[in-house]
Structures are given as C-alpha cells and as structure tokens.
Image (cartoon, rainbow, N blue to C red; front, side):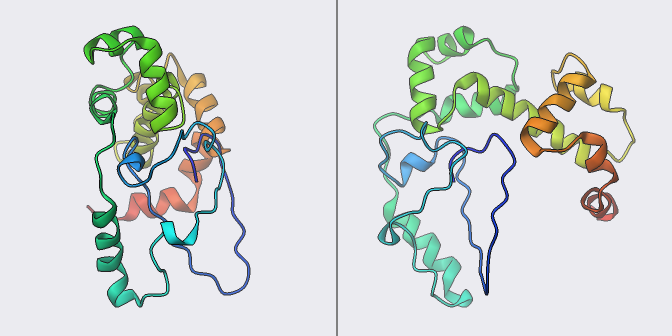
Length: 192
C-alpha cells in the first residue's frame, strides 16, 4: 500500500493471515527499485511474489527470515531524502518548503520531485501528515485531559476546527469520536 492519506478498509475473507511491513518515509527505495511512488499513494498494489518474503515459513522462523530477506535486499539508492524526513519529523511542520530546501542544499522543485519519487506525496503533504500524526498521538495519550484546542495549537494548527478537519480527512472520524471509543479507553487504561 502506498502512502495513505485517507481511511481505507480491506475486507479479508475466509481463513486469512495478515502481515504487513511499514517502511519509514523514504526508506522503501533502500529495498526496492521503483520508478516513482507518487502513483501508489492511497492504493493497494499487489507485489510480484518473488519481491516479497515467503510467508509460508513458520512463525518461529518467519521474523528472522524476513529480517534476513530485507538485509539481503538493502542497497543505498542514488539519492535519499531520509535527512529531510528526519528534519521534518524532528522539527515538526514549522518549515516553508523554500526554507526546507535551502537547509538541505536543494531547490523547492527538486525537493518536490524527490518526495514524489521516494514517498509518493509532496513535502507539504508530508509535513501536514507529520503534524497530524503528532496531534493524533497526543490525543491518544492525553492523560492530563488537556483540551483539543490546546493540543491543536501545540501541534501547529490554527484552531480546533483545522485539527478536526484533518482528523476527518485522515481517519474518517472526529477527535471526540476517538476519545469516546473503546480504542482510546484501552490506551488510557494501559499502564506505562
């Protein structure tokens, strides 16, 4: 599945086992040669079986097998945006694209091309997604009962409404629905 910008539900039928690997943003190209990931955003693509580990291995051997499978595939791509991704994740969404490009000795247009190729979305969209992820985690772990407005402001949203709009866009639900859900109650009752 490419970079996901909207809620998605997959229906599994019959006896199914689900296994997934989530790559850090920009890391997919360390393991697979892909022309560009911008056509895979919000899509589920079936891999050619020889490009994926043999999932018929027993659980006892599967994790070490998958580790070795990916270690054997590891190769450094011609260009990488991992330092830009780390910069965004460390400093949040606080950059303008031009400033971010300058910090990494490139142009805004080149940065745009690299993000589309290596992640599948624009740098601006990645910054928005990073901001949302940060806010989502703070809401999930809100043990001090801080208001959503405070969390929104801390994460760089102008107000509660902008956070709610992103929440609906990325999850299909509202922050208050998450807070009242069993999922949130499970997280809140889980001791550190």
